[in-house]
Amino acid sequence: MVSTVVSSATVGVKAAGVSNPQRLLVHLNQVANALVGPNLSTRIVPTPPTSDFYKMNLSAGDRVSLALSNLSPGNVDVKLIDTDGTTVLAGGVGSPTNLNEAIQNYAVLNSGIYFASVSGDVGVSYSLVVARNAAFDAESNNTFEAAQSIAGTKGVLGAIELSSASDWYSFDINSVGFQILLETSTPADGIGNIVNSLNPKIELYSPSNALLASGSVLADGRNESIQVNASVVGSYRVRVTNDSGSLGEYFLGVKTDNTAPAVVNRQVFYNWSTSSVFGNGSGNPLNAIDATKVTLLPGQTTSTANYTNYSLSLNGLLVDIENLPATLSVSDFQFATWDGINAAGFTSIAVAQTVSVIAGGGLNGSSTDE
Ligand SMILES: [Ca+2]
Ligand SMILES: [Ca+2]
Ligand SMILES: [Ca+2]
Ligand SMILES: [Ca+2]
Image 1 (tube, rainbow, N blue to C red):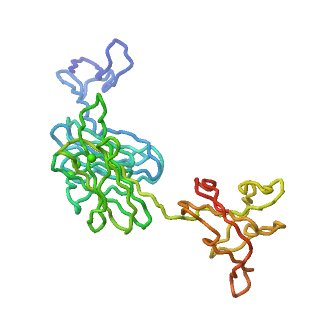
Image 2 (image 1 turned 135 degrees about the vertical axis):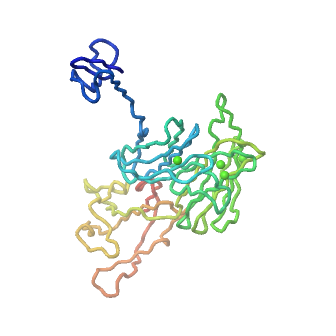
Image 3 (image 1 turned 180 degrees about the vertical axis):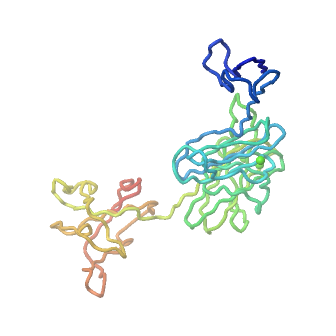
């Protein structure tokens, strides 16, 4: 804007209207100076924004993936920003051939609002996709050796873009007894959606690159699932290809469940107690639990919390077991006593014992054995 003044001038930008308060003043009723004066122009140029910020709500332990693609020529960059709004947790890496860059499977430590910042060359349009607890297919992931890690996620969103294409993914099994569950789904395959004709095909490979299982076709005649018990530890691989040259997007769900039995809780109950606090008579043992007593485990020091003083002695134990084996009997347990002093330690006891199972009666739905 041009301002020709004799004694003073005002320069700035403002919204339309004579006295509109929405304005930014550069020079208010000032005498001529280096910025404003006769035959001078003042140009105000807005600074291009340096980055775009997006926010997302994440929970502690979540894995977040950010995939950035430029939709017009030029570079774009993505960063994951901490809950303070400034600390950079991770920057986009790699040069996937199907994306500009990506942050994959980043595990956040705390619950809160995190940010994605996108910057780059001025005027470049882009697409940013954020997935919680899932990874993105980042090419080239075309061989067993080049498998892309999807560790810690619940799966990966991918695409088969050529009839000869394949996508390989890896995840770790750290203990035998884990069950591996894989299942595909095909997004946007319903009526009225964009066309996704992919008929996915999946195979599971052992850490030593032996084919363990091929997918069983699900009820839709198209998607597939695999369920296998891991017999060795290591990095397993899944290969996604297509049936009959079909192309499109898929979601590969990956679940690893520990199916090994584990004791998750131990409690005492006062069987036949008629106390108003712990009474069960001959009824439900879950009504006669003494929650003030805790198990003394190896290496711990005794306290009164480890003793019971019931007149009928210690006569009821509840053990919560996850992934309970099909059958349990007295012979699956050893019963022994020790006064804590005798050097001989625990000695077996031979009194009548019974074991019964309260399915789903324990902690987190585990089974309780009485
Ligand atoms: Ca980039
Ligand atoms: Ca792919
Ligand atoms: Ca691939
Ligand atoms: Ca199939």
